[in-house]
Image 1: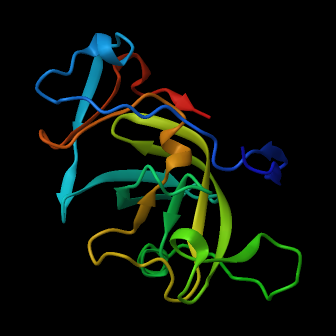
Image 2 (image 1 turned 45 degrees about the vertical axis):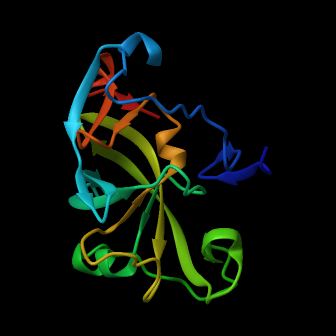
Length: 189
């Protein structure tokens, strides 16, 4: 397990493990995944990677919409937004000077090896909607200048920390994602 850290007044354990199972899409049965009825939503496949449209409210209550890649292996935040998306959505995220005690820090890519580090700021978003399911208290990792921009088509990544909040089925062959139907519209904190 990861080291517990304070975030937004709550004690959080990064990289919380979650169950991941692989199924043959032609033989998948709801009973194999907990017996739930599934609400299915289309995903956009870009370079064979699933992307979802999401909407979120910033701390000022303004709604923003963005396409995010679904990455169950990215951890440390619920979503990541790259600097271009932040600029295009006109999000007001001032990056404070280093050493002023705010939640601004530096990250590296997979394994933390090689390449330049990127300055990021952790931002608490009060609400996010994704494929008919609402999420409260979303931790967004927001990149500084030039950071985390991995695609011309998306604004960032839906990370494993958000995926771990609820059962989800990603059906690559049918280009869709499923959540338990009973969870549609609910807020998952």
